[in-house]
Image 1: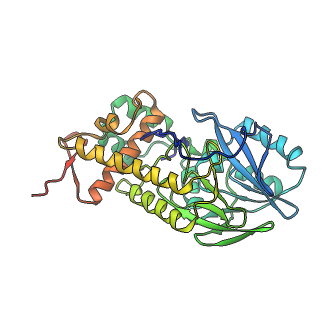
Image 2: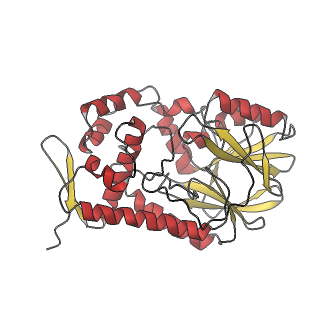
Image 3: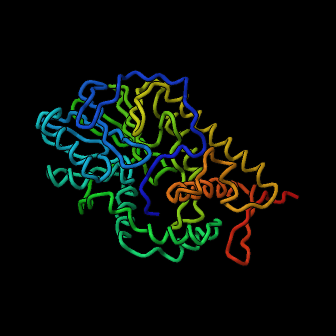
Length: 361
């Protein structure tokens, strides 16, 4: 754990032709675009292959409520200062909502809340998990982490790179405030003139908060629903036997049940779109196709690293960051099949795990 979050669309990068994109060109850094009355679309730059994150400003009385904040970089701070002095009309930030704890979402939250002496609003698991990960900054890689990636089939060179890169999570975010306002699933919030409902999902992160406004027919989906790529759903060394894929699929079904199809979805990446329920089905189908490919591949024993070409359409071995994401995502799929009794795993004398279909006889 402790890596910067970067959506990779590792399993499939299908372009959802059936979705409707209703907004014009995205706003540039320091600019805004109104997507509904009192709701502004803002983009922040990211120093990643995925070069942007969408954040949102919602008119809240005499100021602005901010939803997500961007990653801690000089470019992001410059963009926020330009916004505060320009398109946001010099009005204060009343509160900061963060959908989840990845640095591109939470990175500037501490900076903004201190600048305006305003509260941070997050779910409990996201706030506490973020603080745990930030506490690893500068520490040596744990033995459990090395063992986890060795079991996946990583080479000695890859393990050494993991040791060198461990503990950089906190470098990409300002320290969180020491207190926060908890939000939770089903909670109704008044932001400005409208009521918003908290819809919590999991799989991509522990307790990801989406914000749904029935009056405006808007859903701020964060990373829980993206239009062109799927969010990374991974297992990490801290909880090696977790089953986030089951959580992910349950969350997609939950969103379909509690949010109607007529909303304009405001995602963290790419453009706002219509077609929520279509996209939920595409994400579910993509996940099931990946599991089907695994079942076919595991007729003979394989390591995690042997399964990358089965699950992913591009080479992930040469990029340490992609290697980490791909490993976590592959193990998440394997753990789901193990939990269902479909796959068995054994460890060899070198501590490497080998997976194959379980004997049903």
